[in-house]
Length: 388
Image (cartoon, rainbow, N blue to C red):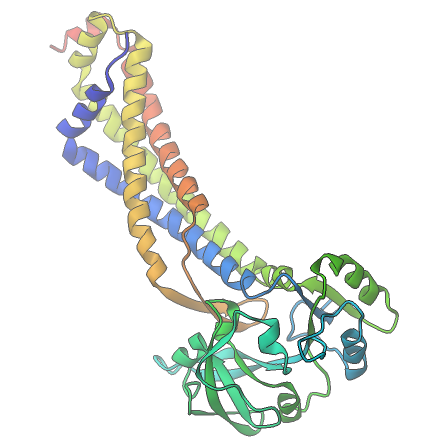
């Protein structure tokens, strides 16, 4: 004989205030757990989406970031002349020789200074990055002291809005356009003409060379060619891989710190669920004895209490996940520890995070209900009925 599932639901409803408090405690833990996963995914997605699969980024061998990299003009010319590089509609090679520097700008809201990445790009930069589109103003003119700002940078930093002026590199720069990069890392950058930025910062070298391959499947061939060339001291990565690597340190820190906090909080939630279930067993001793006297086996009693605990966990999980989903409306910024520049990104909820969060909530409920359920199933009929 099996105890009907409706019995479990009626018991939860009969003790609805206790059920609500227990599920609420679990919901808070689930909220933290889901928010951490969403934060990590948002950071990863922002940087991965920054790159295009067909593009290849080349920086100096052993350099971790573009800021640390040096590629002289001779090497840049050799990389540009590789036969696997794609040709544009005008017959020009799809190459962007770029220089990357960090400048200090003040935030609009707090006035606090922070590092912002300024990227000097070539004329093919927008063609290489189709996700980047000018949404206000126009593209900067090559050879002029003009810059364009990512939407996030324009909103957050003083002087970065269209028509405003910024002073860096011993020169004044006019913001002539704002671009949208579909919430990728480029949204937090400022772009200008590479040659002008190199002159302003007295840098005779580039930081990176970005090329588009004519055939993406020939990446391994291209990589072998440039990395084995004795005249070159570069390493080549697909642009998606390059930016994914940039997120490893910060994403790892967020993940492990968040999961540590979630584990600590979950212990409290499990103990709370356990106390609730023990109290439920104590209050229903006579009821349990009656069920056993009616012929329901120990396994049915165990299953009924485990189901009750699991439902508490899933309920808390759904509530916590519901409120965590609203975090997608917020954009936060932090320093990317590898590039040392500020990066803006949003919380991102995915089906995988939903499944992980519900599994985590279910596990909390099951762990909290196991011992009380075992106790309920082991009550002797005679001892239980004495409580009637």
